[in-house]
Image (cartoon, rainbow, N blue to C red; front, side):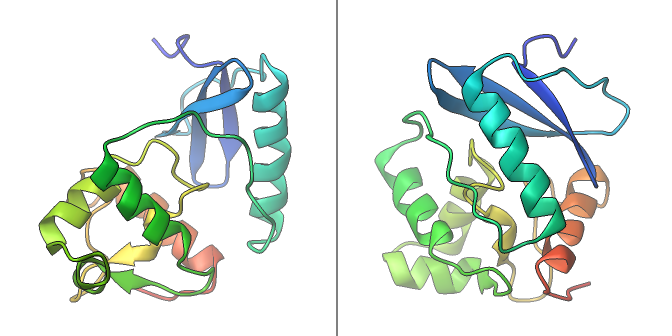
Amino acid sequence: MHSRFDAILPAPFGKVGVRTGGDMIREIVYLPGSVPPVAPASAVARRLARQLEAYYADPDAPLDVPLAPAGTDFQRRVWRAIAAVPRGKVTTYGAMAREIASVPRAVGQACGSNAFPLVIPCHRVVSAGGLGGFAHHSEDGFLLDTKRWLLRHEGVMLI
């Protein structure tokens, strides 16, 4: 079922599935803890695994693996804005929309389509009234618990 990943890495909130292409990360996917791990099959996946371990120990550890080109022009514009949100801070979909001359729903859709969560920290974008959604999910469950864990880990206390 999950053999399509080049690595499935342990995480404090579950697992992280990684797809690579050449010497770049093509996609990062949050997976439940019940998914069996898969050792990294490439140098770039091993590099990401080391960086994620460092991040889980220290939220200030950098995540700077090479990312394969992905997304539309608009999505990449949103992702650049997300990447500028510092650790320990959050922004809202509305504030980000105003910053890039868009609308909150479009920003939320681009956040949910982020192929590189953690490296592009979309968990740092929240709704004006609280946590907001995560990876196109808005109901409580594994993915929103992951967003809560990441925000707490980075020193943001929300819901």
